[in-house]
Amino acid sequence: MEKIESHKQNWEKLGEMDPLWAVLSDNSKRFNNWNLEEFLQTGEVEVENVYSVMRELNVGLNKGEVLDFGCGVGRLARHFLKHFDKYNGCDISKNMLERAKKINQDLSAEFFENGEDLKIFKDQKFDFIYSGIVLQHLPDKEMVKKYILEFYRVLKNDGLLVFQLPSKIPWRFRLQPVRKVYLFLKLLGLSDKFLYKQLGLYPIKMSAIEEEDMKNFLIKVGFKVLTIKDDSYCGPSVESRTYYCQK
Image 1 (cartoon, helix red, strand yellow):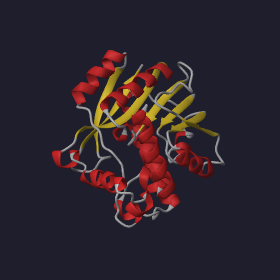
Image 2 (cartoon, helix red, strand yellow):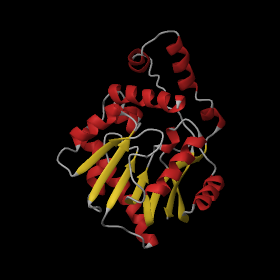
Image 3 (cartoon, rainbow, N blue to C red):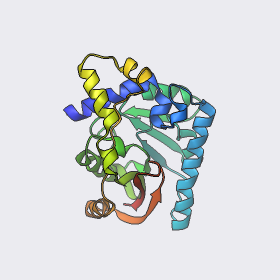
């Protein structure tokens, strides 16, 4: 419980200071320099890329309910609603969700605050679950796997799960020096806003699970792994994969 509370606090701070950059971390867009229209346009590209693969697999969906896990400010909502009857976004940060509701107030979208599980949702509720650039920021591998178990529970039979996760992080990134300096200076009493705005420091964590380990876990849970695609969500230095699975 302590890990999830610390994780929540970190994202509440980021959701207050620089929510769009925290969702999509482009260095040129830091310090609230994202243009909202441009930011939302990236969501259209992301959703269409996912659907391109789904069409290749002949498993495209155009109805029912979608869950966007770790929805942030709802960047993908309007684009998923081109394919689904109802959009549900969940996130651990109230600050992010408040922004999501404002950005998407013209849509038939619902937003929920989740905790260390998805007990806010009943079994077999969703036709499709998506999670991009989210699981990589969880505190550890065990929490990643715990949420995947929850995905299985709330997904309908024959429903689809698509998620992204790094498979290998170089040693120089595993040390996470920016985060360690941030945590040290926090202990000295410096404020989050000073650390971010004046020193460019932030608490974002990066986790990874080897592709073979994740594939074996998914099969053990009960998923059919349809395909695994290389992706560039984490930049050129970090190996990342997007998993396409069916219950």
